[in-house]
Image 1 (spheres, rainbow, N blue to C red):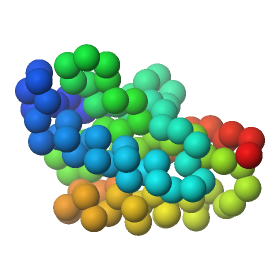
Image 2 (image 1 turned 135 degrees about the horizontal axis):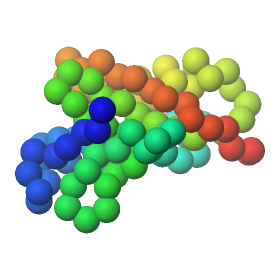
Image 3 (image 1 turned 30 degrees about the vertical axis):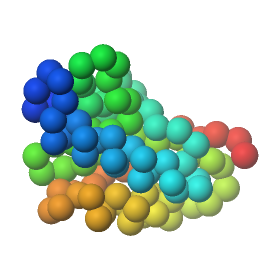
Length: 102
């Protein structure tokens, strides 16, 4: 499912998507955000879509490329921990779509 913004010019979900992206990127093991297979993890808005974050009414989905090294479940939990203060009561799903060297 694709996340759409509240209006064409942005709105609460667009702002939240930007904040979630910034929080996820503070995880030292996250190399980049990604829309994942079939480009399904994205927030569509005026201009370019925000790949890697989909904010929905009851969930936030984050697609990431992570640095190789640590166990993937630990990295996913770190991303959830960083995003949780922004999520309100939404479920946070982390899609680890790829690994990057170093």
